[in-house]
Length: 409
Image (cartoon, rainbow, N blue to C red):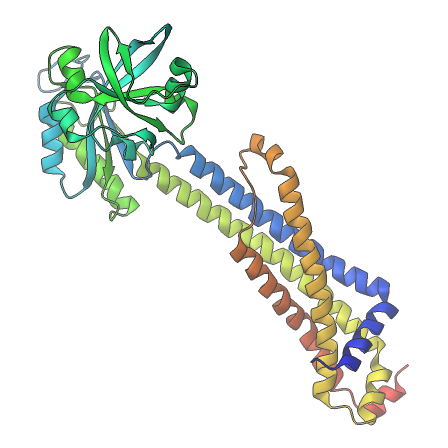
């Protein structure tokens, strides 16, 4: 394989038939180019779907309440369903195996003041650990803890945008802010992958909210994560089972879809998984179809090369060349053309994806690109393609009888 004379002969053959070499190389380069673009766009679509779920944990479920739309058990429609602390304890106990984490949620909108700066924000009363549910990251201080909830402390964890709005470059950690007429101490500042809107929330213990804003045990809704060991189908079944349990507990008709609302990320995950599976299958079919077309193209050209060099190959055999050396000669030329042109096609595809990446966001294609594993796989595919494209013509060349080759026109 490392015979310098053989490689010199291969390069001489390619140089002598430049047009044929260029055409055969273009076929493979174009196939790999399309292959790379398709996989890059597919990855971009996957990134878009991931971005849509970036604001919450992938195994999150939110339970909300509304008004009944159907009469049930002698009760009129139009009743407002109000969750209580008892519902929180009920869910924790009844679904302890399915629920990984659960937090009550009490939301109000309030004016927040620091020195001469003020603005209106959503104040959200939650349980410690809710930051994981929202995929929030604390970069100053801490999140809420159990003692904050137990002692109903007036502490707050504010979003990064709240800090920028009110503190104008100063650190909010340890400072006091006025929320709706009550003084809270800032114990932490967080960022959220959901973006600026999710960073304009202020978190405080839900028990503090219940005591200050109503002196009751009302809960607006629940946020939770289901057990990650559950499959997507099992998580959907769990969500439906929980909804029926709450409907029964609050005397809501099983057919009423508005009184108890479940927003289960498992359903979105299943839809996304199905879409991405179908998209990947389509990309693989089209990509490999294009690649096969390239292999067939270069194989046909190699068949022509063998026919063109019939007399030459016959002379080689007459002079003692072995069938193995002839097969190696033809196959190495095929592999060389395939590898070089395929690599150029791969580089061109990656370059196009990088150059057009930002402009594709309006088509819901975010950061298109190919992974290292894809590049390695494409390289292996190139070598395999070159072997496949050159083997049959090479085998045919090795079977040429010297006397027949010398008689060929």
